[in-house]
Structures are given as structure tokens and as C-alpha cells.
Image (cartoon, rainbow, N blue to C red; front, side, top):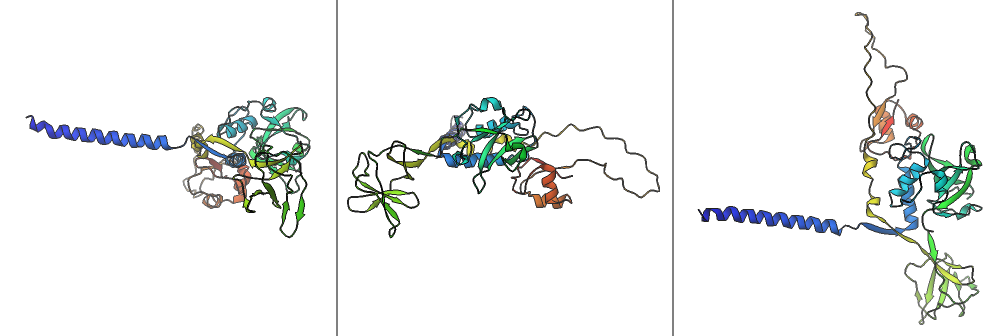
Length: 349
């Protein structure tokens, strides 16, 4: 009997050790995945705008925090919160004090991801609405933004839409400045331009405070050191050189930020299908004569929706329901560039 127990006990031990080893491997893999990633502030702004655009057409509801309904500040809080920025206040009046003030006397001071402060419907001089700045038009004089309006999440512009023309009151910067600089030079300098070489040659007076090396400024704004042997040495992460307010030259580098790694994946809440409305009791169909061959028509004004599945696009949905892409865009207040999220419902009739 004692020998008969050996094999089951050995088998149990092997299975136990194998399971423990698999668990350990899963733990290592899980622990090996980064919880945070580092990107530039400019890249983060692009991702914020891309994520915001995924909600185009999402309906408006006062007090709604998303993801199926938004009001204006519920939208900005939800979008920024996805990237770990959770300190935006809930009201437009309070968001007007978040972040840092941006001087909008020159719209070129704005950067993507800034929050635009807009006057309320009742009083254009009092902040009552917000949107996320997406960029300027080609003439650099008309700010564009994405926001949760009464017509749903959509793009708008300040001057091409009369409602907003007199309502831009200010802007707040929530993200870091895209470019940062630190003064590292101990003197001012003038430059001699060498057109044959396409560079500005810095005189001997322009040197690093901690290293006696001359600087070359290229026409595209990039810069490099001139080493003792005459070779060019480009500093890692170098950007433009600017003349700072104190008269010193300073390098400009892209600002880096750290965000949760999960922010680069879709939010599970965004993929949940919208709850179906409660079904109404079916009305008893009216009796038709036995000799009638006519088919009962659908009630006038009946709204029909299509639930988006993987592989859907506007053309495919339009063909499936016997309508057009333009009609779908009008019914859902979207454009042909709108990202179709799986699980979302589109009105087709």
C-alpha cells in the first residue's frame, strides 16, 4: 500500500510545482509591464485631441460626466482624466482658474490642449462654457476647438460661427509648455551670416558657461557645438536656441511628461454599449380586410438605430439601411472623419 501512494503523491507535487511556476511567470510578466510612460507634452496634446475626437457626436446632457453623455466641463474632465490629469474643477467658472493663464492678445501664444473660456448663453462676458483648443486656421487668426455643445460633441471655431465671435474670454494652460529652456550661457553675442554655408557662425564671445566651445546655429533653428578639432557635436535632445529676456542665449528643448501606460489603451467604459431604452408595449395592430394584399407601412417618424460593430464604416452602414452617408452625418451631427466606436448607436432613420 505504501508503494501505491508514491505515484499519486509525486504527480500531485509535479502539478503543484508546475502551477506555482506558471503563477510566478504570470507575476513576472505583469510586474514587467510599465505602469507609466514618458512622452513629450506636444505628443500628449495630440493624444488628448485624438481621444476627444473619438466622442464626436456624443449627445449633450446638463450635468453628465460621460462617456455616453457630456456637458462641457464633464467632457474636458473626462478627456483629461483619461490621461491622469484629474485636477480639473467641475464648473466652467472654476475651470477658468485651473492651470495657468494664456495671453490671447496673440493667438499664436495658444498651444494644442489649452482650454478656451467662453461666455455663457445669458451673459457673453461671464465664463459659462469651455472647449479644448485644437489649432488655428491657416491665417493664424481663428482658434478652432472641440467641445460638448448643446448639439453634442463637435468641432467649432471662434470667428466662423457668429455665436462664439464675441464670447472668447480667455484660455488656460493645463499641460506644460511644449518647449522649455534653461539659460546656460554667460554672455550675449551677435552673429555673422555665412550664406555659402547656410549657418550663423557664433563669435568667440558666445560660449557655454561650463565649457569653452563655440556654437553653430543652423537656419532651421537647430544648433550644435564646434569641438576643438572643428567637428560638429549635436547635443542630445537639442532644440532651437533663443535669446532670452536677460540677454543670454538659451537652448530650447521639448518638455517631457509622464502619463499612465493605461492611457494609451481604450478606456473600457468607452466600449460599453449604450443602455437600451425601456421597451414600450406594442400597440395592437389594426385589423385589415381579409382580401387586402397591402403591407402595413412603418409608423411615420419612427427612429431606427444601428449598433456599430467591428468593421463598420459609414458607407457600409448607409448601404445596409438604404440611406446615404450625408443623411447619416446629418442625423447624428457627425462628419465623415468621425471615429466610429464599437457599441455606439447611430440613428439611420
